[in-house]
Amino acid sequence: MEKVLLLYISNNSGHHLAAKAIEESLHLNYPHVKVANINCFNYINPVLEKVINSIYNKVIKRKPEVWEYLYDNPKIVRRTRKFRKLIHKLNSKKLKKLILQFKPDAVVCSQAFPCGMIADFKKKFKFDFPLLGVLTDYAPHSYWMYDNVDAYIVPNEKTKEHFLSSEIKNNKIFPFGIPISAKFSGKTNKESARRELSLDDNKPTILIMGGGQGLGPIEDLIYAINTIEKSFQVIIACGTNKKLKKWLEKRKVLFRKKMAILGYTRQVEMLMGISDIIVTKPGGLTTAEALAKSLPIVIIKPIPGQEEKNTEFLLSEGVAVKAKSPLDAAVLIEKLLNNSEKLKNMKAAAKKHAQPHSASKIADLTMKLLKQKDI
Image (tube, rainbow, N blue to C red; front, side, top):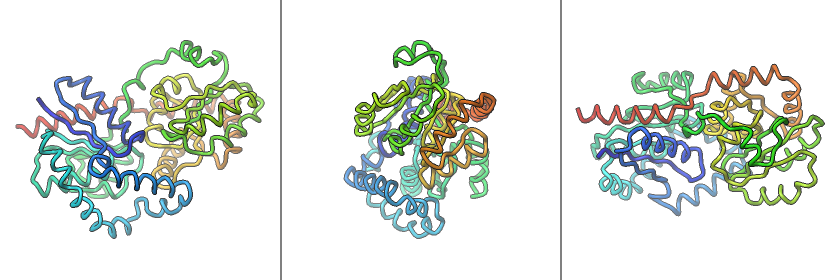
């Protein structure tokens, strides 16, 4: 029986969703394969994971410019090389034990940290399994670059060019897209879905998301769009942000628009399938899912670093518009609702860049490389 080890970091993250999408495709296309899907950070050091996640969230909320400076900064990459090697060494014992116990025939990483660790392990302990690195944002960063990675799965041709300029060989780079669940390639029964959410069939629908954690200025955004005269309805996915959900439910009666308020949901494909516009932070997975559903995007409050880079890509391809503030987002939404031609063009641009079968292609490539190793 062949075995594939999937490694990600942070639950309820894009990295986790990407790993789950690949796992789903492996189970679907290769049911005989045994898959282990593991939060690498939590596995090797759960205390450190909590500390780093806490620091990251605080930096993003209070000092986003600090993260912008750290993200893909060549100076920081060079200066932290020895520190990263030390971290790998300190955590090597537990991860080596996992590899020796599970004995994977291939390892797939949806985040740079575990990919770097496994790349170092391959070199140090002479492991011969193929290692695949799967990017979950539209712009790569230097922390991905390792000699012992056998394949990089990147979102598009532009990202591939960046890897080529970093002297990664052409035959190692596959522009398959960001892996998302196969559910996003299916059709939505709009009438049934709207009925389930107590929404009207004949009104434009705006979907508001703040990622898995329900981040962003959603409270201010709701007040802003409440000023729009045009008739429409709103779906708000609050993620794990219980405080936001409670705040919205308490004030729901104050708003003129019909609203469906949801917590963390596993039906994002259904929500996107019945919506006409999504207002969101441009995380890589959310973006890839929206493209698969041909959904125009209004971007608000992107995180400096990866989300700013995703924003640049989306704006350049005509898939999205960017709001400077919640009030500006309301203005942009109203303009789009009043301009069917613009919405049509944005939908077409989204469809052009959609890659809903990425996870299936990654599963196929994993099995191909795995079998090549055995020849």
